[in-house]
Image (cartoon, rainbow, N blue to C red; front, side, top):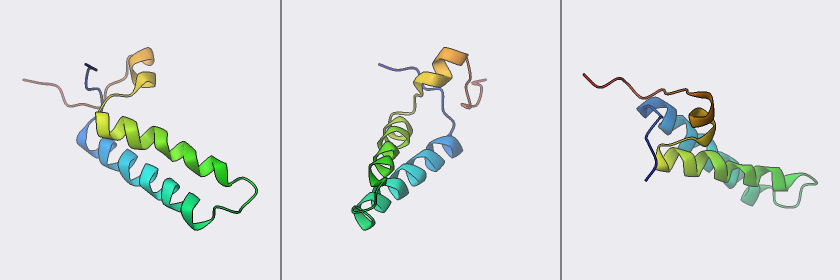
Length: 67
């Protein structure tokens, strides 16, 4: 469906950061700007899918070249 444009390390970092932000929301849900933690959904989903729409727009790929 989507062209993979994220390398393995990029995907791991996105999933970890996304999960940490979502966890931060549940641990600090009563803060004034706690809804910003929910932005962690974006790197989590893109890391799981392996495709980043912004990378596609700018022509970036961290995926290793196939030989």
